[in-house]
Figure 1 (cartoon, one colour):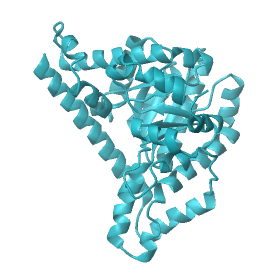
Figure 2 (figure 1 turned 120 degrees about the vertical axis):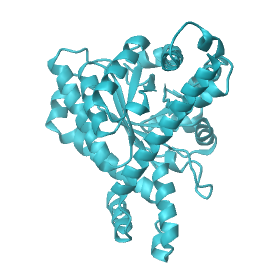
Figure 3 (figure 1 turned 45 degrees about the vertical axis):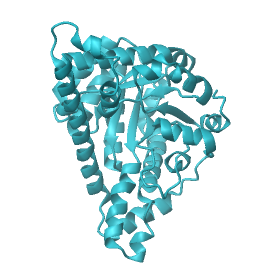
Figure 4 (figure 1 turned 30 degrees about the horizontal axis):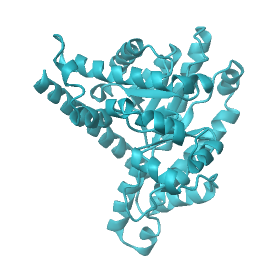
Length: 362
């Protein structure tokens, strides 16, 4: 249990707080352990942007980069795997105490292969074997190829974080990949106890893009919808989560076998518009069996003045928001597809920049 009252309230209302950051300095300084002890942080997510900031801004990796005759790609994977292994060890007591629900640390596959299911499967298997920690998770993007790769990985006992989800169709496909993969694992006698999965739905980026479109329209009706799209979209996803994990016959069979549900993870929860409350995407999405992964600044804001009270999800109002956007010519699914493409491109840029930086230091 977190010692900070605000974070403890979140935890008691069903939210697992994960940190959206990782670096050797964070671990070596004891800061990560402090966040676990004081703020109840019970997991970590990473992505190429996070590793770019960690490696680019530190000399702690330089010696290993110069070691041996390896490709820049192999060196990068080696650095990331080492950091994730270390974080998994720090979180192992959390994982064991929660019976492998929490204490998870995610590592993303190379974003340059996000359209190639076989390449993602091979990459996921490689990093899973190298990490050798039951509380790791491999992040796979929610592309058509990614859903295929995720099903295979889950079916072979690899825990998966489905990432870069923006729309309800993305989420539905991610859940289906989990259910089908878990059914495959069940039929193959895979050890189901440590098997875990989350579906990472990105939140604030929806508002950033939609708000700009609403500003461009500029009518009173349009402006009245600013800051509402992201929460409405996430609310409807949670409604779908509740429906699937209460009525899908596949889940009923899996639950009897001891499988745990794939939890919804709220990603991109930092506020991009300074006019909005800094805890908007935390306090508006407080619900059982969810994860909220926060950058350090958002986590500190929540610890200082967050509410953490259970959210009163208004599904009818959320549908009206999405319908109102549609009436203005804003297709939330088209917005979501564009955002996913942008997200993959951003991660590719960070990954490729890391490769270039490592080549310079070799």
